Image 1 (cartoon, rainbow, N blue to C red):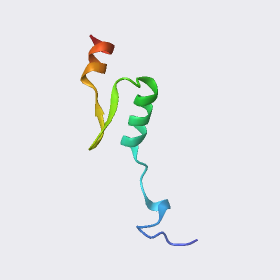
Image 2 (tube, rainbow, N blue to C red):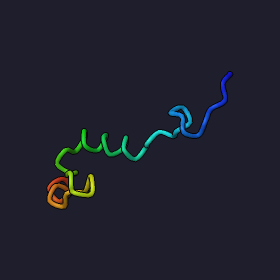
Image 3 (cartoon, one colour):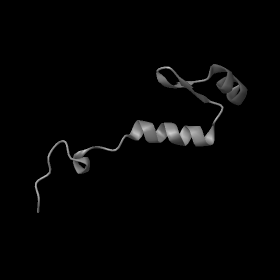
Image 4 (cartoon, rainbow, N blue to C red):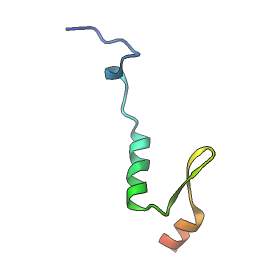
Length: 51
């Protein structure tokens, strides 16, 4: 068995936040927008969805 190094892909944790954001985009595409700093919540979209 080979020893894992910290930088190896097998030693890295899954990016759970990115996975959750992708699921939200799939369920509610109007809720999230791409901004200059990455993904952001659309206030208009949330008002339309949730009142």
